[in-house]
Image (cartoon, rainbow, N blue to C red; front, top):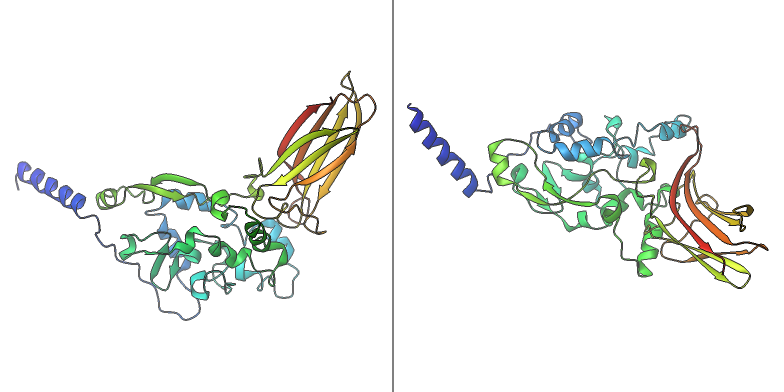
Length: 338
């Protein structure tokens, strides 16, 4: 074949690829099993072929380490069942098979893969996501992926593990008028190609679109802590009032082995420290801050006080699997005494 003929054929192929955007990509084959997938690791690995950005984000997330995380492993190593009951959320089967919003079933194989692509996006041989798509032979769009329900499958089950139940306080805050979604904070929106494979077919059929990051940002990764609460100062006669308002959409701190600490420092005219007061909130003793509900802390002003500095911190406390306290700043404000 002449070079000119080859170029013409290549041009026609590119034009065809551009004009026919719904070319079906066959779903991957899998063995027919009744309890769990024996090819889970292969399926998860194959996702990277097209979704490299998403897979890289997931690999650095707490979801990917939900089973292997040192704190979790230290917590379950002495349990009689070795953590089998915890595997329902730390190493679950597909949540779509149980039903969105319902507690998943545990899997026995490949637990080191934690909460992965298959966990949330596959049911049998059918792929699911927030929108319909021609990929994989047809992805079924489901609005539940854009709502809290899909997260509450594991994070809204107080009867399973109360300390992992962010859903109850979230729903209370929502009923009080808080307009937050789980995805808004934990999966920020970006514009990009969801399919990053360089092949001509996928390059021309999948364009730039609004999608969610799969970093699943949280306090354990020292993310979304800054600005998790609003901190204000007001002077009233002989008192200073520091008001803390959680902006998380759920209780703060959100789980055990954590605390929120407010430190109020009163300074004299020469900058000398006159007094320091501390107030703490912990999930474990039932004092967690309610989302959207202002919580005032009143402190008597010392004689000679000219300035008050307030710092609000989130602490990951030392526990088995985590030797040292990890401080994380939420907010800092200061005010001049009138």
